[in-house]
Amino acid sequence: MSKLLVVFGATGAQGGSLIDYGLQDAPLSKEYRLRGITRNGSKPSAVKLAAKCVEMVEASTNIPSSLAAAVEGADALFAVTDSWNSKSPSTEIAQGKAIADAALAAGVMVIIFSSLSSISKMLNGEVTSLPQFDGKAVVEECIQGLSVPVSVFYLAGW
Image (cartoon, rainbow, N blue to C red; front, top):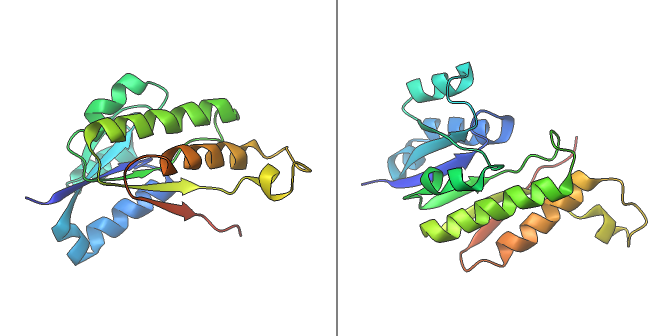
């Protein structure tokens, strides 16, 4: 039986790109089946992924109790947290910790996390007005502290 890759943000830019790649890359698609996590399984982008044989599961990083079923049986997990809608690092940190806790409880073997560097640390506290960066950096530290291998993905600026 193939391994299971769970992708948070499956209907977004990053998660959606990973799913597209997983469907198109023959060796990867033979090794992994895909489960996409979305807050709304009835929206058109989620329905379209389900039609491509992606198992779609409704869950929200803002509702930690919804995550256990979402990651159950996962071998690998791609996580991205939402800093733009909440505009709150504390909300994003809670989302990331909820994902980490669920992944650890489910026995996930590897985590891939989409992060950003801590601007306040890089600039010795001179700039503190970029909470999107600092929130992701705190989540990254939390995930790096888990007892599973972690790969961190930094999206380059443009």
